[in-house]
Length: 320
View 1: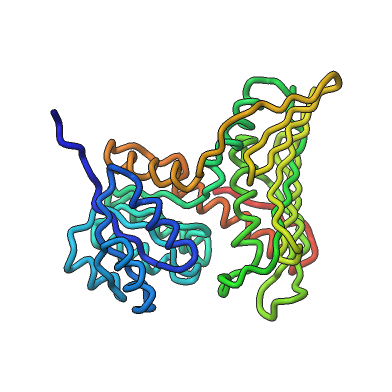
View 2 (view 1 turned 180 degrees about the vertical axis):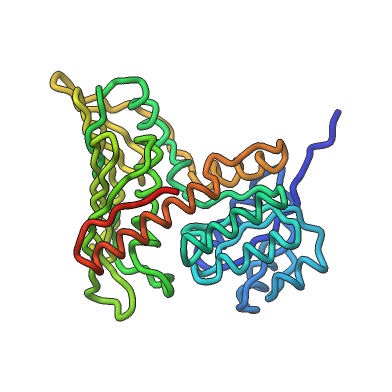
């Protein structure tokens, strides 16, 4: 009987989301979770005691002392690129949380580095692994709603205390930017956006983003940190029917002139599906479903939305 192949993994960043990474990775049989690294020593030690890991405050120190194949990076947005570069230099496969970097140029450098070193690079767009999103994609491709015409999304909630170095566009709306590209299978050619801030001094806390596509399709994204409760919804309007998705419950409904269908499916944790996929890519030498290019494109669209709002005009997105 073959011994199960395992990937030695470390988590960098043990804050709100990093703790979830540690929990999920500890439940995947093919993972040998080795260490956790966080600039807050107390936080690193606390989670390492709970899961029996080695705690570190400096990732380079960790790479020198531990045998590690891959890392997941869950630090603040402004430090994502820095940690990714360190990991790639040390020959580690990288799972990096969105928005991947501070700019699309920085993201491009990470992507090129991973390509040169022949290392896996997966970007953390968790909604791609939401079973509800997968079903919506299948429904569209099956021709059930006819020709897709438009997509609208609403991703709103109260102000998240964990956010400190990025606004609602790059932290929140970027999920829907990626999902819309995925569902429609094309890149937008222009964006018009209005963003603003009501409660935050440095970053926008609400945004309305309109995307136009070469096929004539359109998308409208609403995102804010001002709504008293969490809503995560998506609607695809087609020539024959409409699909509605609740990202949170993963419930999908199909509305046609004759009936409303609500297929029943069991809820699954997207983060577990996402991280399992990353581990499979490392073990089987496969390309991740969410690539560095996906990360670069989502970030470029987010940047163009912020530029549109600042200039008060439509911004054409030039894809090289």
